[in-house]
Length: 261
Ligand SMILES: NC(=O)c1ccc[n+]([C@@H]2O[C@H](COP(=O)([O-])OP(=O)(O)OC[C@H]3O[C@@H](n4cnc5c(N)ncnc54)[C@H](OP(=O)(O)O)[C@@H]3O)[C@@H](O)[C@H]2O)c1
Image 1: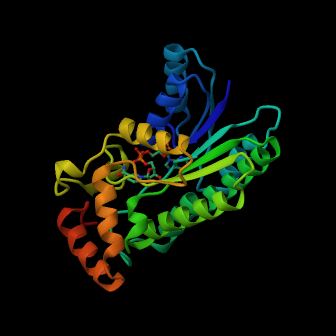
Image 2 (image 1 turned 90 degrees about the vertical axis):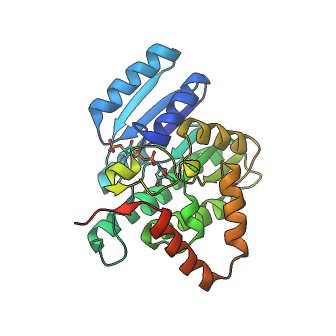
């Protein structure tokens, strides 16, 4: 029996990971801030799939929260075989609209927590000679789109670099880069989504299925949908200067709409 620890497990992509991994027979440790929601979800998954589901309420924007999850990953008597660093959020507004303190909170969750938890997990996994980490990035990592995109670009670079450094140890790492996924993400950030064409939306369960398939194949980067693979191929061909203008215009036309403060 293997154990997976999923951060941001109560909603969206994290909840889809929890459903899928429980259905596949993995024991789970679920992390998010809302303890009541975590306990309800753990009960449902246990009743439906008969697997052990533990909960660890923690705020990954705080040192205490990161420490608590790190300590669980460091508990060698109860090893975690798969870490899914999924917790994350967006901000409404462009650069200068978002308070710097909020941007720093995003960096804490998207960068510092991912760095520290990946480090805690992989050191034990390397000693055991097996295990893996899936870090949630985004296709926003590949275009110049503010702190969110920059934090996800860090996730991609860090994950692929670490994967190379531990190659041959039995530990795998993969960055998962979805496009728009129907979750609570945009609503939580106060972003309107009416301008995003229907064809651009992905289903969280399908994202997870495709991501886990890529992970099983040993990929270090997964873009879990053919539409976004094509878009990303075009993005790679575009000159950097042009890309900023095009993605900014396309973002204004088709991207999430920021409500006035
Ligand atoms: N939806 C998209 O279009 C999309 C596209 C590409 C990448 N992503 C990435 O996918 C990941 C999951 O996003 P989602 O769309 O599934 O979002 P979501 O539906 O809003 O779910 C976010 C999850 O993260 C948890 N969370 C948020 N802040 C946290 C914190 N400080 N500490 C601990 N847990 C926290 C939330 O639970 P609590 O509120 O209880 O803490 C919730 O379980 C994120 O990293 C996001 O950047 C999303």
